[in-house]
Image 1 (cartoon, rainbow, N blue to C red):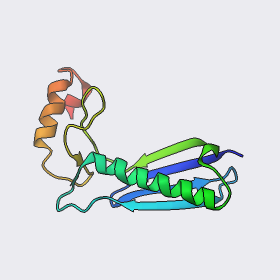
Image 2 (image 1 turned 45 degrees about the horizontal axis):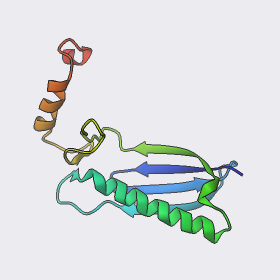
Image 3 (image 1 turned 180 degrees about the vertical axis):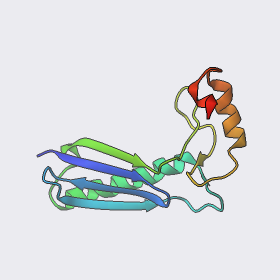
Image 4 (image 1 turned 180 degrees about the horizontal axis):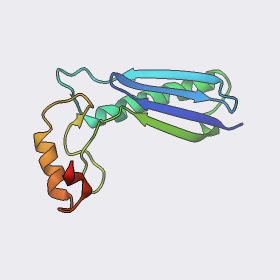
Length: 124
């Protein structure tokens, strides 16, 4: 039987759920983001929280006689408007900025420098 894994990278942390083909939730896990005084998050913390949830899911599945190898579909959802600037190898080059972060000046300048001069976005 094929299982599906849902991953939600939200404002306060990462949540995951494993569902069977009928949509029954078999297991859930949650891991908070590392506490920060600002709305900037080290993007590697997202992966750390996701990996923590995945380990918890594999354990929970084993407890009910199931296996992570049964997972054949994955859906990933993130907080709208969050962004992470990366290099060409998709390695973060700065903090993740949440939808409600302020002060995107430096990041906006880097994006603008990489964008075409005649793009439709310039009209905004």
